[in-house]
Figure 1 (cartoon, helix red, strand yellow):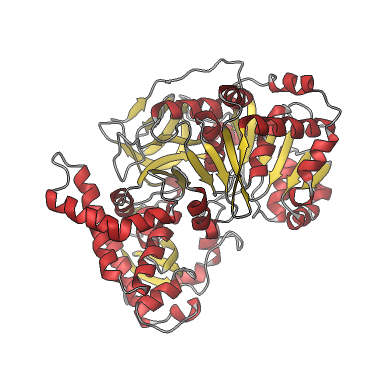
Figure 2: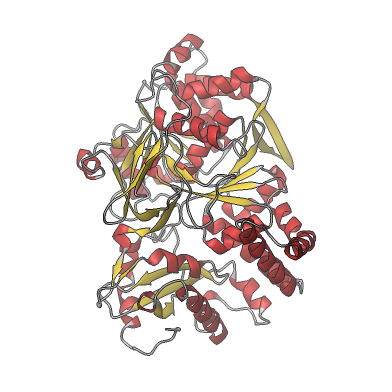
Length: 604
């Protein structure tokens, strides 16, 4: 199979927009909880009617500030309740909310302000306001900057006191499905970020169709905690999905402390990226080692993986395996589920491949991770595994209204309700993004099986061609190595080189636990980079990763970098993707060094 399109399950009137999803939620039960806000040691419920009233009040403030229908309104903040409030207030005012990552540099902020023409910008605090102030002179359309921590919501509410309800009602009905709902700037692994114009139809249709085909997850009364950046399309889409499905929505600003949030909020489903699941596994392993229970943990992990694989067989797990699984559940799995809140049966993973091992591990302990696939330009998901139709290692079948085709060169092409309108102010890039048949060029490589399940095998532009002419997709090797507790990032190299190499950075958070687990003294990441035991462990991780590829594709040599790759130093995008072109340029000397001494320091 090389092409499939799934018919839409749900249609919406062409004249509708995202405001109608909220109106439907409010009308179904005004008193039901729509969101919960952190309050002291607990969570304060916000009813659907209360949320809607706050949306109207803030929308009136935007109108009073001179925001016209179609005007871009900027939001620059960590993930928090006010983010969602401002989003829906902007739509209620007929405006177009434009997110800016709170980690953006002044140069990136300047580009988004000027390219989108943001008129009013709401930032989280004085620090972000200071970043904006550095470039505001170069953004002539920007009239006002408000700070959430300095009373922005109250100020907008007060400003709009004299704006009538009828004006908001009128503006809520202005947009239709084809109109632009938001401009989301790509995180830019290469070149200048492009503003993807996402329509009301993209978000609304994709949400209601996902609810229709995955009711076990996105159900009325479900709960989810958003902790990924709402400036990213993935979290933003789930925000809309929560409104459409009847989910109670919570927000958490800090990924480093998210387990505390999950434990308190107790979500029924979790939205995350693969790195979150890797860290949960590694932290559990290190905790077990610290408590002298590492052998029990490794046995339980192996049992979970074997049990999950058994679920995919005709006969299912054996009786003995089921018995072992019950024992492991008491000793290990129940405790891990409690860390995630204790109520979650499903998680949705996107933004990169999770890997078969972790997929089976989490399903085996009682949390089915549904891997999906999409891009900013496809409003997040175009495909996702289902609770009743899962193939671990794939990204599932297409959602209703979505189509996929595999081009002759292996590129994944996409078409349907999920595909964006085009790039803002960039007709050339828009034209280049589509083929002659109107299919969007994803830039990813993949394959379809006979059941319509899509598997992503690599990035077209990141294919490495060795001096011997071997084409190598780095993602598989990088993902496997990055799953190791010691590893933060791995970048595979070898373009026009005699063999494949890799540069690795150490995980500063995972290092102390690993050292303690192996009865070693405390070391800084720089010290650990030359430690023989650390290097031996990394070598073993490389050897295991090499088992997934041919000898010609395997990593022959690696080196450990003294620092890490972060969003702050410009080597990662906000969704944790490596800016490969920047990395290769800045670490050219380190890459060259891999090929100076041909003695192998890794298994061949």
